[in-house]
Image 1 (cartoon, rainbow, N blue to C red):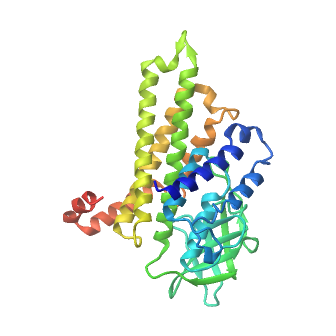
Image 2: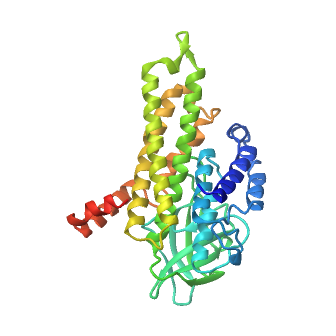
Image 3: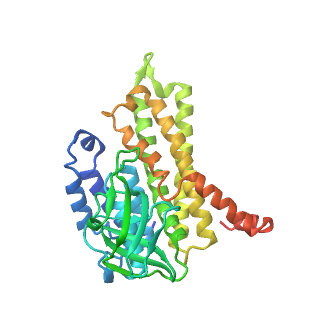
Length: 354
């Protein structure tokens, strides 16, 4: 990690540690912790990390932003930081300046479509849009007869039906009914909905990997504190085996997510190499979330399921992030189609090149 990346992620981690402590948040039933956290993140320029200074952002690199997302996953923060970062990145693709405040992106599901009408307005429906109700603006990728366009839309002009994911965070349905955008410009050549989904998939993979790190830390600490039959449960072979499995799932998720992030940060576009890395990361991290969450709760026993304990903040969010920007089953099918289209002779060279 470069020195600048260290500085950015250290800033993020300090803010999270000071204002997003899991125990403090768990006790705050009114959500009063959110405003100070968002204010601190905004003052540090983190929500618009991927937006150049010419478009109102802080101009951080892709690698720096990805490092922030990993840190956000370790704290399982329930504010639209990742979503605002993605929205700013999407707007920046079309040189549209990012406004202040919370944002999100639409669509967030690869099977949903937003279309640009002949008069420039937007129509369609996007399901499972994270934090749409909390967002002031939505960055939209819309398809039309001339290709894809990027648009900035005032969230107040949209019909937003509230929903919740497993972590009790917003996962809303947004309806566009001939909505005029604040700004709309053509997307770069070759940029399509798959590009947006892959970027979102890598963002969620990093968050899942970060959350798994915290699950492992919490589980190891608990196992070294909990005493049963006059000895710490970490001394029991079955518990040691489970913790080793959890460590393995965490390492696999971190490796896959970091590799995908590094590939995107150093790629000129969303080519086959990026597709392979991003889809493999989302598939592997989703599998790790399922297995890791089960192991962490098994180590904790019944206490881990209670609302008073912090474990659920990490496990439920990791499980819910599996569905955003395409779940693992969808990407497994798409990856299979891509590999089959290339032919058998191209499979090994593609895999071996990574």
